[in-house]
Amino acid sequence: MRMTLVALGFRGDVEPLVALGGALARAGHQVRVATSPEFEAMVRGDGLDFAPVGPHASNVVGNEPGRRMIGGEGGIGGQLLRLRRLIEPVIEQLVGDALSAADDADALLFTPLANVGYVAEQRGVPSLMVSLWPKSRTSAFPAVGFPRARFLGGPYNRFTHLLLEQASWRPFQRKANRTRIALGLPPIRWGTPMGLQHKQRRPVIYGFSESVVPRPADWGDWLQLTGYWFRDPPVGWRPPAELTRFLADGEPPVVVTFGSMATWHPARLGSIAVEALRLAGRRGILVGTLESDATGDHVLHLPDVPYHWLFPKTAAVVHHGGAGTTAAALRAGVPSVVVPFFADQPFWASRVRELAGGPDPLPRCQLSAPRLAAAINQACTDPQIRRETVRVSEGLRAEDGLGRAVAAIEQHLASPAPLPG
Image (cartoon, rainbow, N blue to C red; front, side):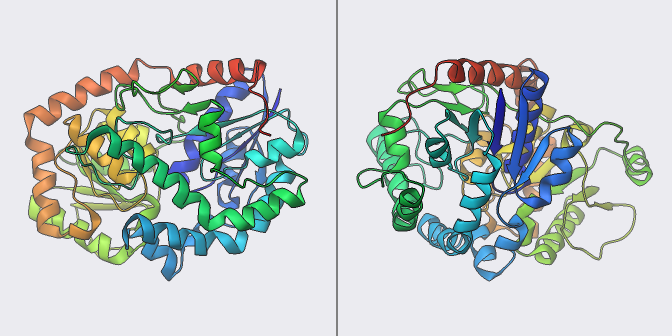
């Protein structure tokens, strides 16, 4: 079967979908991954066909509105408003690119941010949403971006999902419906795309583990949790000599990586990280675009390194709480110090804390070198945290998330739900 997988977002949003594409290809399918041009080398390096969709993600958020969105300013409302301002100018390009990418596809898989189910409608082929974070309605926990309110319970949780569906759709409704009409599709006048998906019980394949997010009791069997989708290091990859020496020269270091969130203020974040490591008396590896003038034997800067190789060799990981980085730290069995910025990151931060996989989250707005140093020391010395991270790691290593995802996708595409309308 020819499948096109459309994935938008940052590297942490795309890399697990490339892993899924590779697993589908090994199962005998022809797979094309349609995503931002900056990930072409990753996709082609894994032997998959590539199609560009939209501009470089870093170009979209590498401006002041993008940095303010990443910084989580204005809460969920402010984030959605800035997302609209960033996405609206490129919607036509996204639509055109997605149509081209799916031109010869027998089936379409897409992530929530891509949300190109209308392309499958127009092409008359089956489609499936695949997601790295829980998007379906439930009374078990609030929608991502909303705070927990235990005293309000299930009704509050379910209401936040309904509210997020509306808030994510209404700002784009007019332009999205114009696109649908131009494609010969009826406009969505009532409800929301996610609401219709819920009403029609259209399947969603979730790429996270039930041992990290217990399956909500009110989720139907059309919502499937497969386990995480981990991508192996590139074939032939070898650690640079400086990294091998650094790891051998002392105690296991602390890794600090904020992924694409470093775009917010790379120099400020780098400075805080280096000072926190000094206060904690720890060696550290700064991965990504964090900026610092620190030199010497206690800090190493690396532009990139496979997390699944590096994390097991470290004492703790300081990160932003992205789905992929959180999963990599949990599977490695090392404590996490989570500094959530926005979107689904506070949700994953709360899951890490509830699993005793790290100290209390340190939100970006509260970040300082002394606070980060205290959290690092707690993560590295608390025996309960160390014990629980090992326990969770053993469970995740026993799972076959990619295998289960391939089986679920093949099952649903063999007898697809009827197209909307």
